[in-house]
Length: 362
Image 1: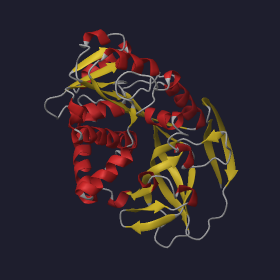
Image 2: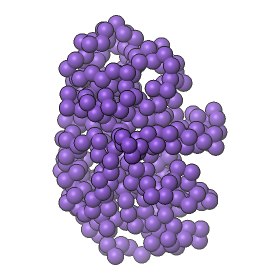
Image 3: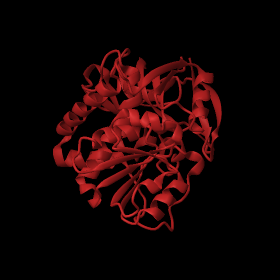
Image 4: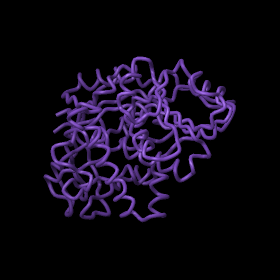
């Protein structure tokens, strides 16, 4: 049995290669999984662009300091087990490598799932180390695993952004500016924010995606990147930066004199990433979803946090997957060439926002 993995060069993420290694025998306490379905979204581009800064490369080390493995969200099945509490055939949702196999070291096993206790993960955030058994997962819906792989991790980030802003009284702002408004994380955030009173949600996007963003119905207004002058410069606002476009960030900070908070979330515009030093107004601050999870676990307890998330998730997916007017259709592909082509297209910002892409390497 062999494992095939897509790797990207850490300092030039447009460069890729495939590696094939013979699978070593499992050690006591380990399980081997077959990664059967995973999503590729702008979120994965962020993982690559921020791989060193946010330690995304550390989850599945490549063994080569110059090359990394991008983590992806999706589903896998246990095909071999040397752990008494994890059976062959169990299906799991979680954070996988862009590969056909993954070896895990289950610990703290419960009916809901387990953590991966591999030594190299000891200092990494626990949220990404959780593998969830689909048989007891409140989020899992049979027959919609592609939608779950595509939207679940993004929407949970969206939900946490909305919760974070509300928790901070929107930093005294009345208008929220969301860049890369056609991205799934952005419109998931807009979907949640639209349920709040007293705030205006403005989506910023390219001219080619304006019609799509307007069709969603969750933005108060959609504005092209070259049309910022449509928004009054003294508007008290928060900037939610899903794009990571340094030039746009500079324009936002220089134009809006009442900018109350600048939140860096994603990096869909990899070619335009730039530092944030010397900008007028508030210092851009990276949003780290696990930190808000930790806070709400302390505030509410994990069961209540989970209940709120599941309720919101069900409402969002019902709307996004509405067969009469879906926000997203799913395109599933197999094989190395398809995955690599989609990755390169996504790096260039050429993906159709109305299409979600899932893959298998089997």
